[in-house]
Picture 1: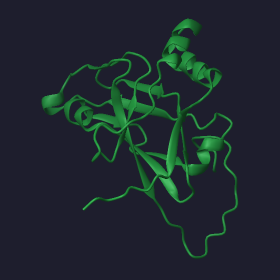
Picture 2: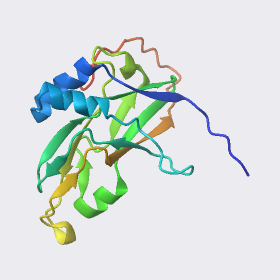
Picture 3: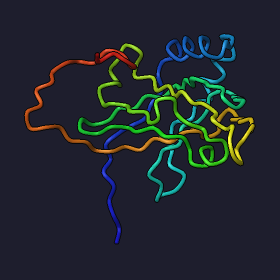
Length: 176
């Protein structure tokens, strides 16, 4: 039986200025390296027609020793309908092989984040948690353009007595 998927969102890129600012802050790259990375950004994409997750791709080469963390500016934003949320997780292979984890365990990208001052720039903070068992001491290398995280769109509901009318303007901690 053919199932028709609901089309509820669209990926795009943030402006170069927004991308460059965080890329230089987090990775110390030159203007030229930031521009090169920006021009080569890949929009998230599903690997197969049956995949739930949209792969997010690294804008730079990233090396994480065990215990090291990186906040990765994806250059991506997601415009989605109200009633939907984008949940972000590490790609399964990195989780199994390196215990790669998101620092907030699961990224939650709300539909109104798209309209924030930072243009809804999705940043993904990861840690190489290898250090015990068979993953002990493994250095994680992610190449520019390689998928390292995945996002899944999910519907959500609200309570009957919900009367929230606050407007978002920012990312982490912006809603109180």
